[in-house]
Length: 304
Image (tube, helix red, strand yellow):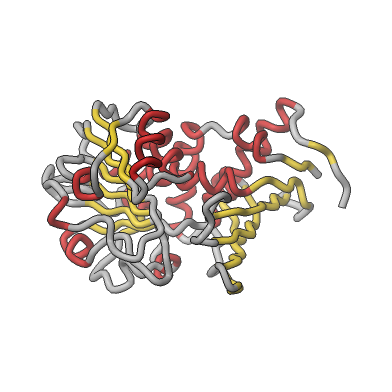
């Protein structure tokens, strides 16, 4: 069994390859070929511990993730995780991987996949809301599928937003509204109590990726949800999200990729991709890491 560290995951997992690999996995999920039972949660005083098993046949990926969500973390990531990958033929444990890096990279890759299929082809302005791990992940991933010429960063803490903008070669926006103003793609990566994306701030034809989750708050306002084509990973999984729990209709990204739903139908349509994360994404990412680790002789062998 291989032990693969956070640093090694970062070295071995290519976001571009992951974006491509997620497409057939999401089709499998929508077609019922993937196996993803509802995740379970244990509550602690400061957060949650979730268990996420799944099987993605397109990658022959059988894996389970244990992930914590502690929204109050400042010096540590709000999401931390480990993933166990298994041989899909024998059930033998194959690897124990750091799941924190995989969660960060696969979440951005999922938004990039949605952006590839839902954003306008001529999208040039990108707004990133948030200054944490997912802000970096989304900048890296989403810029792989569209040629942006203007990137803005907004955050609650102006100094953090300025530092991240300098690091990423972007501009700093004065507010959530200023970041959204004129943006073709908006990536909301926050743990909000109040919406950071409001309908009146969005331009016609904007695409929104929303990955933030707070059981006591919302990232997207009702008017945006009402006006947008709302696309999710899984109708079943997204029931956890306070943002779109009462949306009138939901489309799965796998249905768009498979051609069973047209996706964007006009240049001025608002599209919204709401992500809560599904286990097939973790499994596909873990399978890519494990394949590269075996090719390069990476990771540390251990016995249970």
